Image (cartoon, rainbow, N blue to C red; front, top):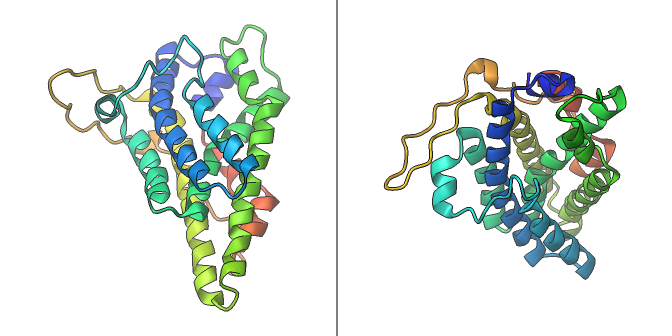
Length: 255
């Protein structure tokens, strides 16, 4: 519903503002995950790109929707359930120093934005659509280039699994399968993140943390991303990532 309404310009402003508020909270943690990846970068080019990306995410929505120095307490009090689950998935992978799982957890954000907003742009956006500028921002060539880079980094990590332990075929396959599971979970959460905008965010608090925010309803939660490889064979994450976005068409149809 979120993307459909954004595409035709009918998305309520309060829903969009809720989404932006949550996105600022999300991007605060997303930037820290990129910083963690940068600290273990395999070369200078990767280090510079990841570091630059981390900084840019902190001002993703410009001065009007600046994150204004969000604190840990702000995140704990204001983040909604999907925001917390999504960032926890990414931060947990980063804390373990597992580059394969961390890249698998951060790529879906980039992939789905690229896919969704490029599709909307190709379909045409009305001149009077209040979200036209936002759609164009994420349909830009720079977004596609970022998608290409992140995909390449994940592909490289997947390829390294076999080179590090060429004899451990069973263990290596389990690692790739786990990366695929993490990717799917992150893709599902990325899709649900948009729908979360229809929920009422928790109010700001000063003296104590608010009660846990309500879980999204069934209608507001996007179904899990389906596996498009039904032949029962093993999945090579490297080939899978290069081949394209698993489940994108299925996801965008529900937004």
